[in-house]
Image (cartoon, rainbow, N blue to C red; front, side, top):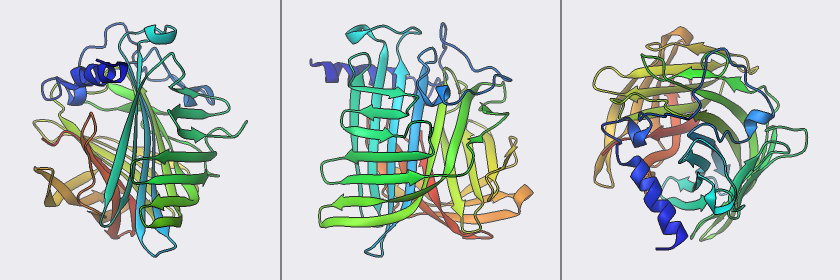
Length: 350
C-alpha cells in the first residue's frame, strides 16, 4: 500500500464512529490534546497559522460568483488538518494529516477534487506570516503585513481550474464569545472566526474555455479537539451575504432532539453580534435525491432578533462532495425579507 493510500485509510478510520460519537468522530475523547478555553483572546497574525496542539483545524473559503457569460458559479477551497497525536515531529514521523477539497459549481454541474498529504515533508502546510496555505499545487497566499485581507487562491481538478484574487477591508468577525464558539449544551466548543466580506475577481477554466468572474468570498477559520457531543450526527451551516450589505453565519448541530444552534449577525460596517442557542430557526421545506440520499435543498431560515425571514435555495441540488468525508456543499440564493447569495454545508446525511 502506498503512502497516500495509508493516509486515506487512517482518515477513514478516524471517521468510522460518526453516528455513535459525533459526526466524523468529532465527539470522541481528545485526551492529550489542547481544549479551547473561554476568555482566551485570539492572537493575530499567529492564529492564522496551524495549531498542532489541537486535534482538528480548517481554513475554509467559499465564493459566490457571476461570470461574464451571465451564469452564476460557486467556488470552494478547503484545507483540513487532523492530528493523530498531540505533539509535533519532523518528516514522515509527523502526526499531522492534511486534506484539501476544491469544488466548482454551476446551475448544471458540480465538479470537485481532493488532495491528501502527510505533514512534515512540505507537501502541505500553513504559515501565519506572510500567510500561506497549500497542499500540492493548490495555494491560498497572502501579502506581508496584510494578514488575510489580500489573498490569491488557486486550485485545479480533472475538469476545472480557478485563480481568484480576494480583497477585504472590514474587520475579522469573532464568533461566539470573542471567538470561543460553543457547539453543545454541555459547553464543548471551538475557536472560530471569519473574514466574510471579500470582493473577488478572477478566472475559471472550464471544459468550454475560460470565464472571467466577479463576486464575494467568505473565509472561515476554526480549530478544536472535541467540539461535538456523542449524540450529534451532523450539521447544517449557512454563510449568507445580503444585498443590504449585512451578513449572517448560522448553524444547527443535529441530535435526537431539537439540536443546537448558533448565529452571528454582521452589520454592513463589519461590526457583529453573536446570538445564542435557539435564536436561529431553520426548517427544511424541500428535499432532493442526491447520491441515493434524501438531502434538504430548500430551507426556511428565520432570525427574529434581526427581522430575518428568508427562503434559502440551492443553486444546484446535486452539489455532493463525494470525498473521504462525504458531505453536501454548494452555493445558495436567498429570497424573502432579505435577498442575497451564500453557501450551505450539510454533513451527516446517510
